[in-house]
Each structure stands twice: as C-alpha cells, then as structure tokens.
Figure 1 (cartoon, protein in one colour):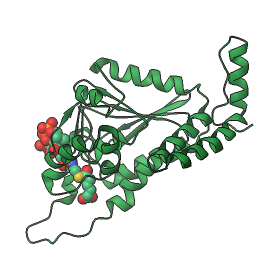
Figure 2 (tube, protein in one colour):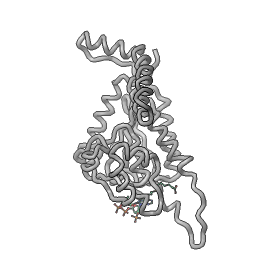
Figure 3 (cartoon, rainbow, N blue to C red):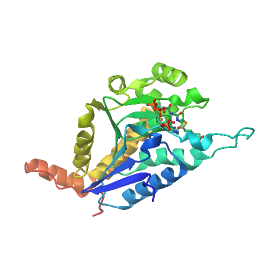
Figure 4 (cartoon, rainbow, N blue to C red):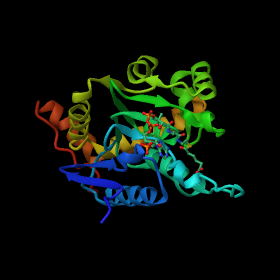
Length: 265
Ligand code: T3D
C-alpha cells in the first residue's frame, strides 16, 4: 500500500497536518489536494480543534504543482487545467476563512503554489535552511494561489515584482527581515516553536481569534471608514461572548482564563 499523501496527527486542541510526498518535494497532485481538503474539513468539523499546524515531510515544505502531471507527450497539445478553480483557489480561500489560526511551519524549500499556500496561512515560521521561491516564471506561468495579492501586501510592490519576474529564491532569514513571514528559527527549533504556538491557540479565545482574522482579511480592501464600521460590528460580537466575560473575570481574579474555544454557550 502506498503512503498517504497527507498525514494528520490529532493533538489536544489542535492538529498537525503534514504534506507527505517527500520524493517529489511534496508537490501537489490531485490526490494530495483531495486528502488535504478532507483533513481541513475534518479539522473544521471538530469543535475541539482550535488550530492547525501545516508542515512538510522530508527536506521540503512544498514544491507546488506536480509537474509530472503536466508533461506533454511529443505532439500532444496542451489542455486547459482547472487546478486553480478546483483546488488552489478554494484552498487559499479556506485557509483565510477557517475559524481558527493556521500555522505554517516551513521546514525547507517552498516553491510555486507551495510558497503561496504557506504565505496564505495565518502565521508562517520558517527553518533557517528554508526558502521561498516564486518559481512560476521559470516555466512560463504566472504566480497563483493568491501570490500576486498577498506577497505585495506583505513585502511591498518593488520586492514582490522583482521576485516574481526573476524567480529568485528568498532565504528564510531574508523573508523574516522583509516581513514576509513571522519568524525564522534554527532548524531544530521549527517544530517545537510551531507546536508551542498551537498549544497557546488550543486554550485561546478561539471565537475572538476568528473575528480578528475576519477584520484583517477585510482591511486589505476596505476604506478606513468601512473598517471602523466593521471593527464596531465585530467588537459587538466579541463583547457579547462568554470568553470576553471570562477573560475579564480571570484578569480581575488574577488567574488563568478558561475559554470555551469554538463551543457555543
Ligand atoms: O498546471 C497547473 O495546474 C497550473 C498550476 C500551477 C501551480 C504551481 O505550483 S506551478 C509551479 C510548479 N513548481 C515548480 O515549478 C517548482 C519545481 N521545482 C523546483 O524548481 C526545484 O525542484 C526546487 C527549487 C523546488 C528544489 O530544487 P532542488 O535542487 O532542491 O531539488 P530538485 O533536485 O530540483 O528536486 C528533487 C526531486 O523532486 C527531483 O526529482 P528526482 O530527480 O530526484 O527524481 C525533482 O524532479 C522533484 N520535484 C521537485 N519539484 C517538483 C518535482 N517533481 C514534480 N513536480 C515538482 N513541482
């Protein structure tokens, strides 16, 4: 039996999801897309899951689309590919919309859609030996999976434009210095740091964190006026939550809060 292309470890309050095609540097084929979608569905359906850690097996995080599936035989004509509509775009939308944080632990090279999927996660930590490459231009494609939207917003137009046109890799340390990612850590600290974050999220006021994600997602296109109105509306929701009441009570009583997470009243 072949190895599953996605591994899922269930832990108290969060899940570790590992892209697992190491011989192809965890490139996406349709089966891996389907398995990742199922893993995310299950995490979302489980109210006890309050964070996801996404990482890669072996020496890479993910090398984007599996190009073996795109190699034309001599004389064969290209056919339209629906991979963006069917897989990559729903995945990026999903990562943003999930009602809990997703932490990408980038353990090695992240290239093509693999780089942009990492950058679509809420928090990106990378091992010092990792790198991010907008490799699309090398094979005549355009950056996808939200790259042309997310990257210029993270590091500015000048850097994003040059990276996309040259396909030059960005080492993890540089990515952290540029604000492309949250943090670059020594290789042996990557998983411990990512797990520490997920353990923090596993006892956090998850519904409040979900509202933060919604506010930040909208801020990219809202005017200040629209954003102030949205903050008012989302804060109304947050103020009415049992977690806010518990947070204030715990603060006053000088104890650790006991938040409900994703569970309703
Ligand atoms: O068609 C559509 O659906 C459109 C959607 C596109 C979305 C995309 O993601 S397009 C971008 C696709 N990805 C790439 O172009 C990246 C291709 N890979 C690389 O450029 C390099 O492999 C890396 C920079 C990622 C790493 O380089 P290096 O030198 O560390 O490793 P390597 O020797 O190139 O790769 C190791 C093995 O993995 C090798 O196989 P082998 O020779 O040991 O049998 C290589 O062929 C394989 N591999 C790496 N990336 C892919 C891959 N096999 C298939 N697809 C890959 N993307």
